[in-house]
Image 1 (cartoon, one colour):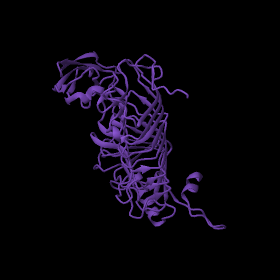
Image 2 (cartoon, helix red, strand yellow):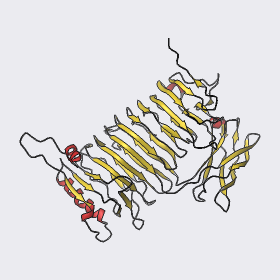
Image 3 (cartoon, one colour):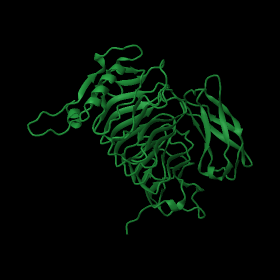
Image 4 (cartoon, one colour):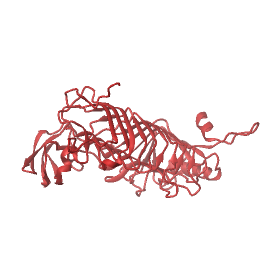
Amino acid sequence: MSLLIGFLAESPLLGSTPPQPGVFYVATYSPSGTHTDYDMARQAADAFAVANLWTGSVLVLKPTANMTCDAVPLPSLGMSSTTSIIGAGSGVSSIVKSAECPPSAATLRHDNSPNGELSRAWYQGFTVDANHVDLAACEIYGMSLTTFIDVACGNAVASADHELEFGNRDPNSVGWMDNIYIYDLKTFDSVTPGSGAVLNPVWTLDSLSGVTVSNGGTRPYTARYARAQLVGADISTCSSVPTLTPTLNSGSYIDGATITNAGACQSTAHLYILVQDGTPVTYGMKFSNMADSHVWMLRATNSSTYGEGWLNGSGDNSIYYERPDANQFMQILDNANGNRHMSPLFTDPGGYAAGIYSQNGTFQNALLTWKNSSYVAASGYFVGNDPQVFQDWMIQTSNCGSTSSRNFVPITTRDGTLSPNNPLPPGVKPQNIESCDGTSAVDWVVTEP
């Protein structure tokens, strides 16, 4: 706790007593009506933070589940004050939304303040569980110089936009959530998804007419959330993208699919069926207008469409050791420029490992791998914007370790696979990219002058 207090408190004048944050323990409070012990402790800690704008308060969680009904936002005061939260570890302490209480925007939330960005709060060692009640687990807006260590956020309601969002929604301070320090941040969902199913598309001329089942799965699927979609480099040739719904047998393994739209695709050589399961959420982690920050170990493990979304205004961040998993890919939008993604590990990437739309940035020392031979593959990097947008995008040293897939395409543009008629945009600069198709070939080799 001494590190925390030293971090939060202002530097004292020589010979003076430094102001201290108030420390509040959930274990010392009792429930009152619909308010849980956590809710009552938060009321006391939040009130202290409001009354002590330069120190704030610290809430210490129980080493177990800390239920909440209120899910009230943290005080948005600007300056150096709010309620920091400390737990015994993300696998020990949790903040859990009660299933009997009405839904909130987020189980844990901090909003923008008219007084400016909050500075120097601290969040460490706990899980935030929305319990499939709240629209998000964590929403953190309007902060700077704030640290997050060993924090997990998950179980947002089905079809939510995100499990977690960091950013700034103040139109006058766009991009000013800055100098955030994140060490080991995770998103999750408690629904155990099925896995291992392999469906092969059957084409009649340019339309999807059926599927064959190579593998019904190695783990049972959920009837509510099992879904399938067409992915691959040739999706750009489809004037109408085929759609389908997987069907399950009595054992909850996939035994076929119903074609809901046959579609029309000029080329089908690089089209595959990606099967997913688990609670559908668009973004595991969503970063909007967060800049100049330092991030170590992002672990997006829930079955979201995008494991990470680096959206407009989220630029000039240093990101190390990302670990998106479970058929997700990373999305980098137009104005998320200058981000440095170093040593990411993409496990079982879905349509693509990363969709790149911004002007510039870096992927360095990436590893793409999959858990078994059922992975159908699509592409490593999707360069999805107008070729003239890209100015200085570096993809340097990307490989697949000991795994490979004959279907793999290292780089795809919005017009499909690379060809003399579809060259790589000149602003995209790959170096040492392994083909990952079993040939051990390395493309775009850099030779010394």
